[in-house]
Image 1 (spheres, one colour):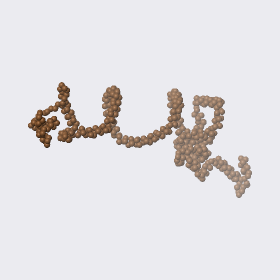
Image 2 (image 1 turned 45 degrees about the horizontal axis):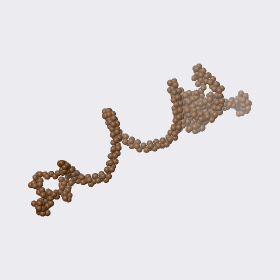
Image 3 (image 1 turned 180 degrees about the horizontal axis):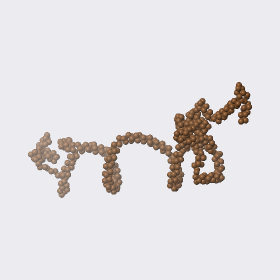
Image 4 (image 1 turned 30 degrees about the vertical axis):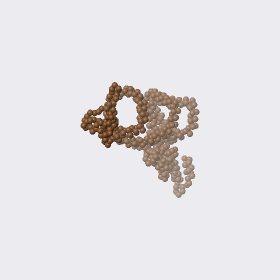
Length: 470
């Protein structure tokens, strides 16, 4: 009020009929307008920016209205303020739709599937802001960010409200007491060391924690926790099961430790093995291609073979006793076969010796002579006119010679000559030669002076005691 009085005292006297009261009222209105503008400067700034600056409006659907103030709560992207929340309204499904006004340049970085979350400025609360996170590889289409990609924080008061039982409160008291004991036994020093090293570690830890939320913060981490819960339930379903698993794991790691050298050697040779395997598979590819092309044409044969094998099973079943009886016989035949092997080797050597000139001579002139028809030539011309092969004539000769030498007397065996007595025998009417002529032909009588030298078949004269012929 003193300020207003000072301002009113300094107001000049009425000019042109304007009274001092009117001037004071005008100053008072201007003052309240200034205070209202100062109080709503964020709204005015956002309205002016929406009218003249390059901005984009983005909407996000949250599960509930969470302490966001219109035109006062900031919107950040990557920790940088890019706009503010300008309003919120409930949806038909009970969720809360928040409208944000951000720079168009920041909107171009959101991607096709951005997400949003409400975060406190301080650890224990305070002011809240909306954190936008880009997602997807495309461009933001301006649609409302769905509730599946939004989240709100869980405050300590909600956690404490959930702890309503005495057992839970007693557990919290015990935890606080144990924490105090840990701090007294050197935990405070460790905490101080942690606080000294935390500034270098916290940014990377923040990135890790952010990554654990996944691309769907409202679903990925809860599903992961639910999966861990299911695994824990399965491990603790039977008492002692987890201990057995750890014992088996210890034995497995001990075995791996003992075999570390062979494993390291195998790992060192694995690249060469893989290269060799790759080359072998590459060489095998043409065979596989041919097998694939052949398999289609072989399919009908395989179907027929299936029926054949089905019919062959009874035959094999009946053959089994025979094969079982054949086994002792094969065992007894083994020594014979073992003795036959040297004989076959010796026979092979003999046959190899026979090969060459011997077989050529036997297959050449000898076989030609033996198989040729026998015909006399020279002084034996006219003989063998029957055309029998030589080996048959030789067989007949041997047979008749054996018959001629089959006579025996007191002096031993001797040959004989048989004179046939028949119509064409010596002196017979059908014989053109006489006995003298046969003897002359055999060289047993010399021809006489009255022999017809020109006729070899003439009857010779037999010698007499006086040297004449009869």
